[in-house]
Length: 131
Image 1 (cartoon, one colour):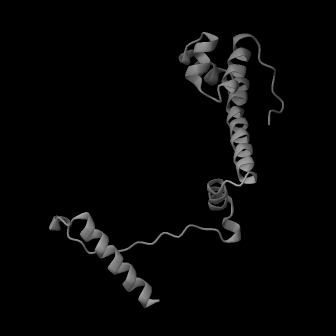
Image 2: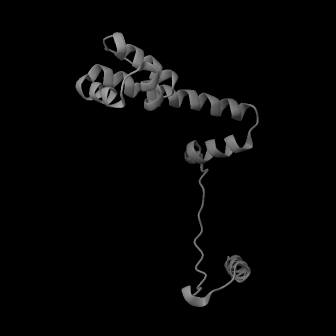
Image 3: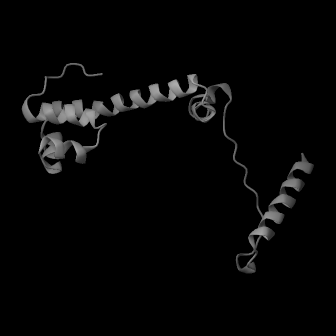
C-alpha cells in the first residue's frame, strides 16, 4: 500500500490517523482534529505525500468491508453469497439476466395496477410458450 512515503507530522498526521479511524469521513475527522474541511483539502492539493496517504485510506476501508463480507459468507449469509457471486463470480458464469418485456400499454390508458399485473402475466406466458 504505502510505499516510499514520508511519515506525516503534527496535525496532518493526526488528521490522517483520525480519518482512518472515521473510515474516510472528512467532516467527522476535521471536527475531532479541530481543523476546517478547507484546510484538509488545501493540504490534499499542496502536499502530494499527504494526498497519497489519505487516498490509500479508501483501500483500507475496502479491505475492512471485504473481510466483513467474506466473514458473512463463511457464516452462511445467503444474501452475502449472492452479492459475492453477482460481483465476483462472473468468470464462472454467474451473471444476472435482465429481461425487457414490452407490455404495449398506452400512457393515457390509465390501467390499474391489477390490469398491469394481468398484462405482465399474459406476456410472460406468451414468452415462455415461445421457447
